Length: 261
Length: 77
Image (tube, rainbow over all chains, first blue to last red; front, side):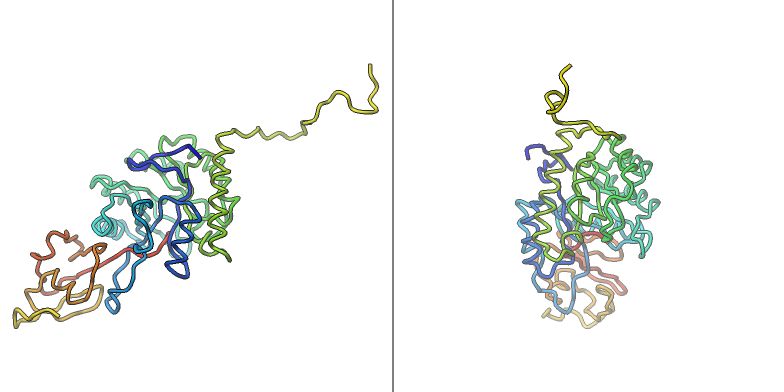
């Protein structure tokens, strides 16, 4: 896989971005990252436990020379919370990258567009490289790009739902109009879901539950890696157009029993 | 544990828990007191980031709301 893409001034080869939540141990997280081939992994920002402040950290299991950390603002329901979390993440991890989430509702975890746009404006002004988790809405994606986001991250389906790409037509419009990478974020359930998004031209896919929630997370991590590689190859190869009727792939001449005229 | 520098005590909130601490405690001393180690943490006071370079000079005041965070496993909300 030689094709690469750029994000925040860095070049990446792997088109699979993985989360680090929901694993049974830090060691399993480490091995899943390894199997996935991901070069970017997301982490959440949370209060330190004052009862056990010295316990081991996930970061001890991530080789930051090879892996780029992408902190998120998961769990933030207002622009203000997301902005403060972003600033804390930058201070703690020394990175300007932020996966910006402003969540609108606990049940759907759909983004709050208004809050997302407001937080984006502030954070871009402060020099953050804002990667926004957004609805699969072409207009919002366009606004986010115009505000200076170096990529947009529309959802395929609700976070953790495993439903796969629910609105390929919206994604197609987003892909057609975007001048920045489009990263499909959330909702991927299995390998084919990831492949479809990449085949359509998405630059990368981001997932967590699809891997961590599988019966065998390490195997699924590998499956996702291969799916994304296959999807990218198919995208570069250029698929055939869809047609309603058959088109034979064997020669039409020399069929036995045919009369020679 | 931190040496007592002052008799006067103040109440601050640390990660949502109220704590009585000496009045001129610095952020650096607070982190020591709590046993927080490692470089990958960040501190906010009343919604404003305290840069690492200010940990030794920034002292706590009555009613301060302190947040001490680190990175944990996570994907999305």
